[in-house]
Image 1 (tube, rainbow, N blue to C red):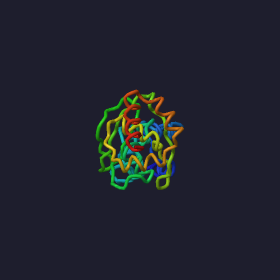
Image 2 (image 1 turned 180 degrees about the horizontal axis):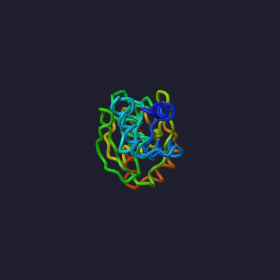
Image 3 (image 1 turned 135 degrees about the horizontal axis):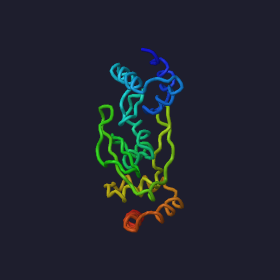
Image 4 (image 1 turned 90 degrees about the vertical axis):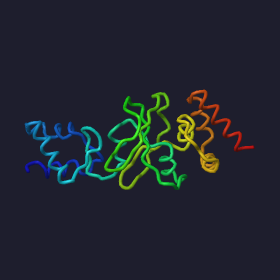
Length: 196
């Protein structure tokens, strides 16, 4: 099929791409937009590309690329602890986003991923971490701590101690000022229990 090779060359190195990206790329060639769908279906049937979300595809077979399909978003909670080397148990991708999309589990490339929504005012504390051959947004340790209490997630004392050892106290204090009052009080109480 004509243009398949060009799609491979142009989009294989991208983490994710959309139908719009392909249509924009071929706009100067005056290709019928329906033909772009035919090309994508051909690549899907050959399992060269994978559907990540509606209208979003990837040449990579990795459920973690979902984070690029629902931007803005970041990996958080137990998943962030894994990326920071503080959690040994296997976890599913947990994405946190301020977008108005459905909360809950999604099937991505045969794996489950969990989407959680957060207020836009609490969308901060993100760092880029190298994952295989690309960079992904992950909550920093201080924001991960805030998120655990904000989302009412259970956190073992042992894990909390490890987190507090790696925490930048100045940064955590700034984050606590931005956190809801209930969340802030829960964190302060947990920190006092650990200290005593």
